[in-house]
Length: 303
Image (tube, rainbow, N blue to C red; front, side, top):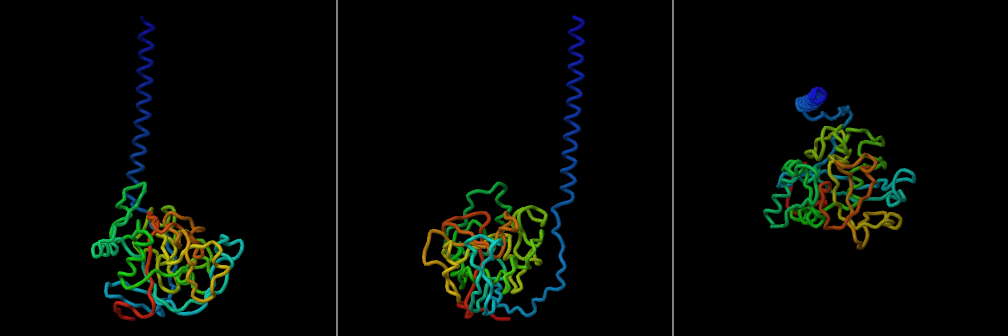
């Protein structure tokens, strides 16, 4: 009987010790979470922007308040050299693109909602997202969950159109074939890409990353959300495409989207990187921006 009480006492002491360790661990975790909450979201890295000069960028303001940047006519280096990209980005060749306008910012959820209310077009649909959906669907964030048809319909409703793949790439990388809009180095924090070191876990309000701004003026051509373009996808199209204003394949199964997103590493957000998907695909990482010919269809004031 005496041994029984001794065993019970030992068991009690062991259990008390175990509960004490669990309590300490819990307090440590909660304390760490509290410190993170007090710190708030990470601040994005700071870059020296003193050398940026966009005074020469010509813009067009539409009646709805959207601003477009003028991309001048001329030649740019499209695609990638061997060893720097995928086979569908080759060969790298000079391509002439006529002048056009492109949205300075990605289309937002708020803008797209105005379109669906006015036209009764189906609302965006995001089939899968691992977190609270409102973290990517608030009005100020870029529109996602939009199919290619939805993006094309919005642009037409707004008096614009989707940019061609060549137009998009020129607007993103300027004339010299740079790998990203800012240059040839993959610099963490320049754009909203995978991870939270740039200050955002998911998408950010368009224009939040001035360090990634294209020399032609548009923001977020790299990262934030991928962007639908007008073209049908063809893997070997570059080798047989016209050298002036290429429009993409005649018809295929997939449409092209470009630019990388908050879910991509820098290598997959290069300006030459090509993605493709069926036109009806909707996703948390795909959005769009519009383009326009030099003469606006619904008015607008040039600056």
